[in-house]
Image 1 (cartoon, rainbow, N blue to C red):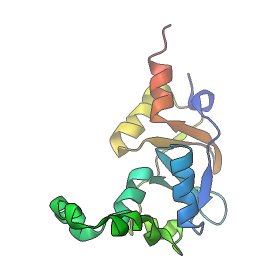
Image 2: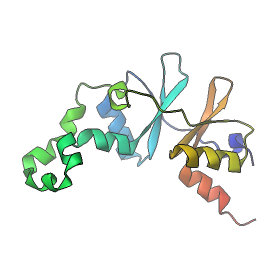
Image 3: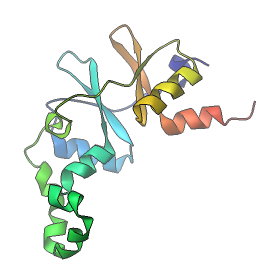
Image 4: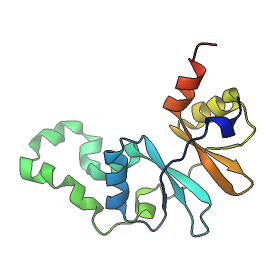
Length: 148
């Protein structure tokens, strides 16, 4: 089976999309991540949901999780306010990671190898510079575990 046969339509946001809207899309659809495109529509990054969660948690709490217990309810309820007025670009690491991408004719093992090496829940399926779809880790597992 080739990547193009495994690929599914998947939501995409661009670098300058509203961060809160992107987070809501991730939450409402329970997505493990989302493909981020540049101004030309070419995929440039994957924004994992875990990266958005990391952005929401103050650095001092990440460094010492025991401090999370001292935050009062009202402060905890406003954690998503940090996304207001931000763009998707601001949620991405300063040094961009390698884009998890495969070619349309790559095999299931090649796709799995990219996911494993980059530790990413999604890969973009490309043909030249055109995005054909996305393969999620759960989709890959579904196909790999399907009885023959």
